[in-house]
Length: 319
Ligand SMILES: [Zn+2]
Image (cartoon, rainbow, N blue to C red; front, top):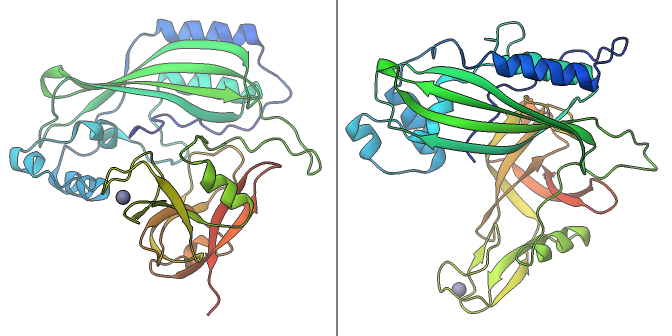
């Protein structure tokens, strides 16, 4: 999924004095849906080569066809009109009022659950896209693993020159009431990894303080993330190697926004290169984000997130 929440939940202070009732939420949802498609501000920049070049580099897409033909990769649709998270400077859409009402109702948690994109044609160099948002559905309240919440669904269509639709996206988030918990009775960490038979060894390793890297039992190739077949020899006979736990920071981002359930922002997400020859994604911890540097030496550290989940994270290696 390349889409990110185009309308991150505006963080309004919880209005405890005037809680929003379920009826009021349903009424507001009906009103917002009745607005139909609401045009947003046109993209600040036209479709341009530098942004396409950066995107292709970031995605590792070496296909020369886009720049040769002057076309944008379709999955970039949202890139052109993504708004900076500056308070008060946002272009309002029919979704914002509803998300704010959900916040006021105590449904302050947010997690994206669906993103479906449809591409009608390529956006061309020089073209300026305009988004239009249509709020479509509010479902709930429903009891979920994260807490009681509402699923809010909306569609964004990007129009190009000639008012033609270029791409559209259905986006759905779960807005939930975070469960209260004390240290002794910690709720489950809201972002549980999908554990399956291909990945269980990795998570069991983390619990026992081992960084396990999937290894082909036939040709010996290491790889991460794990999968069902060796990409080199197609063998399905798989084992693992326990890594040394050392690494160097290959790349990273500092996550400021949007809020992530169970986490305090900002936090650092790094791509760590292991001496064993694979790269692994993990949080860089015990280091202020401003002091994180590409190439820094790291050592794995195991952090319990709840009673069941241990995440391998990365801390600066003492020289
Ligand atoms: Zn192999």
